[in-house]
Amino acid sequence: MSESIPQVSIVVPALNEAANLTALAEQIDAALRDRSGGYEILIVDDNSADETRAVCAALGGRFPLRLIVREQAKDGLSGAVLRGFAEARGGILIVMDADLQHPPAKLPELIGALESEAADFALGSRYVPGGSTAEKWGVFRQLNSRFATALARPFAGKISDPMSGFFALRRETYERAQRLTPLGYKIALELMCKARVRQVREVPIHFAERTRGQSKLTLKQQFKYLEHLSRLYDFTFPRASPVVKFIIVLAVSWFVAFGCFVFLKGTGASNAVAPPLAYLAALIVTAIFHTRYVRAQREFIVRKTPWLDFVLISIAEWLACCFTALWVATRVARPTLSDVFVIPFGCATVVRYILRKELLQDVRGLRKEIRTDELT
Ligand SMILES: Nc1nc2c(ncn2[C@@H]2O[C@H](COP(=O)(O)OP(=O)(O)O)[C@@H](O)[C@H]2O)c(=O)[nH]1
Ligand SMILES: [Mg+2]
Image 1 (cartoon, helix red, strand yellow):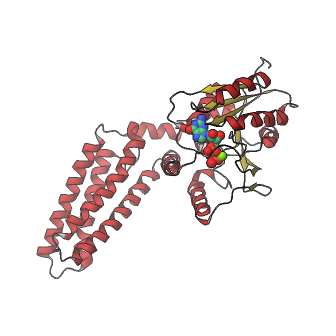
Image 2 (image 1 turned 90 degrees about the horizontal axis):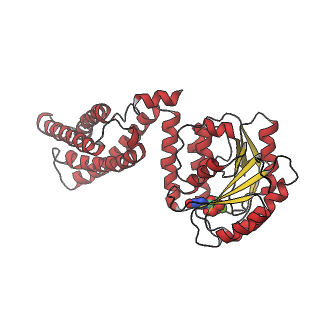
Image 3 (image 1 turned 60 degrees about the vertical axis):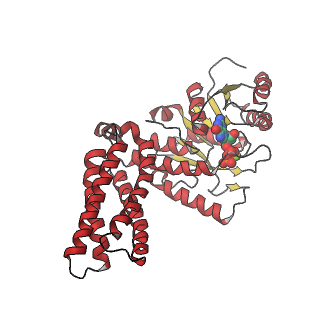
């Protein structure tokens, strides 16, 4: 193993992949050994329960391969990749899975795209001409993937496979990235967005079937993707993103509350009582979104007590709803159903908008200095 600095660092996140690592190292070596410049393989393991350590110790004697074990990491795949980058020495950084679903034979092409073309990011893609996948997905999984890709479009642009985990980038590009948050599986998307990558070259790959070990992709990870997207939107559109989120929460909460309102009217509730009761449902929906908001943005929220503020705002909204519902019920002659619902909900929403803007500032975005810092 040469002591000189390798040109290429291949970071491989691995969790219980001992059965795949030998073939992986052999195939990487076969693809790269004739290149000048040298390479290193960094296996980043999150305390696997299998023989990963023994296998890597043996492989370390045959190949320029190093094992990094994170004992108690909680930030999963993306965190493992960032840890690998922190220890990598090469000028070109590559990420690939350990399970041989990504073809090592394509490594020279990925590296070549960075070396010879203007590209600052090279992405192994299943969906460009020449690419393919061995995974047979049902209709639901396909729709899910299409939808996930569509949501990433605002920052991934026209890339056909932004969910890919097989990619290469120059060290300078990685170092340009601001505020990386290791969350979930989509580390390529995170890097492309936060490093504001412009030139992506997609290299067709065949995404092979996993023959050994098990997939770690869970439903929980898929939900994390939504939270990840929400952060990427905040980063890319610091002004518009909070406003759009406010509207989405409003729409969902009104929708649910309207269902409750219709139900309550069906049970004979009066015009003064049905709207305030239905508004409680709107508040519950909002609280669910608020939990995510506080979790994701706590460090950027100006106020130190976002939950107390939320409760105070909710009480104010609810009182506004109560009073206007009472007013409509007692003062408006022959109110229509929409008078009974829309007037109290509209007033409560105005209160919500003003107070959230003043107290939580989530309607006009994150703290100002963060916004300007992000815009530069
Ligand atoms: N270090 C580390 N690696 C992980 C973690 N989760 C998944 N991986 C690795 O990331 C790669 C892709 O995961 P995989 O389960 O194959 O995802 P799939 O191909 O989408 O089914 C594999 O090499 C996994 O071993 C994790 O929490 N920590
Ligand atoms: Mg896999």
